[in-house]
Image 1 (cartoon, rainbow over the protein chains, first blue to last red):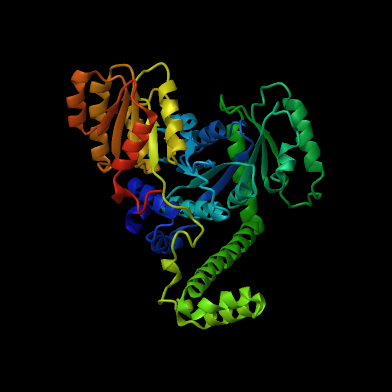
Image 2: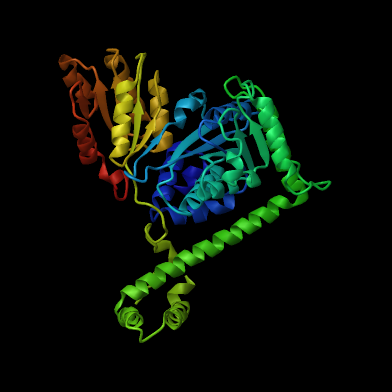
Length: 317
Length: 155
């Protein structure tokens, strides 16, 4: 599996992505083996409110990258219904032009209601695409909740897409996503209200911390995704941002911080899993009961369980 | 007791990830003018808890099979009204085989005349749902016939 993924075998890539998404047992060994081969792709996040033209813009970005002879992977994230658990993933409809080109791999991903898990699954899917030789990986999400913000954060460069006429000019601030934008995109720039929106965006940016010399100045780029207008300039801006991150060492700082978060999260999960097993077993069967009867307090019980888990030789694995 | 577990053996549930879902490509091959039926089906499958990748109108066999490959679809639902099924379906089945996707369940809906049914089934299309088929029958059929080996555990 690992060799086939490294060789760019699309079926192997697709199957491994499913394993990652499903949390299947074969995913982790594969991800471990692939990890040394990751870190090459440029990761770009595209986020913004529903109807802002993210899919169409992503499609145009793909075209532009292909023109520049760079291979592209796309992860299109769409919400899972909280009621039925199903999802309707329709972004491919707007990415049809990419068909027939082995340099493009598009994968739709449902959020599946995983709190925090979405960002993690996305990060691992990025790694699979990265290891398979994609030069650029685009993550497209609806920028609404914290989860989506976390997903966007896993990109090196995050594009926040805005459009005129959505009615509420502070949607972006409300959702708290303006802070994570590296490039602001004013899409559907041929529409009425584009100039007003541009003025508003500029105004919002003016509230940000003053940009010191040598720091990244968030640009506002105007695009018309349906015609491809402004997309080449957008790709230039992404490349410029990437170069800036590398030149200033900020990329390294960011990656280091996110790896630190990842390590903590992974270790937490493992410890939590062990504790759950421990509490379900006979050794600690009485402990919860004792806490329930007020014969013992939860703090000392937690300390005892933690000491037991940390002392367990299996925990060293 | 912890039975010598390593983190690698932690279950999907422990990792906060979700159970596998049936993934379905709903596609309209050929030159049909509308996709109302396909959209109804897509919605019904979604409501049954499946992840439906909708690809829209005027799909070539190559596009459909490529989408199934990249999306790791368990099922392909083909909706066709134009009467071109005898030209299009064999090509799709052949491409699936060539791509190593023989284990994908293929079902069809729309207008397929009764006299073509034996030939369509012989190509490997597992079921054909014509006008009047109930959404429940389609959902039940897919749930019962998707290859269980394709996913660890279908939710």
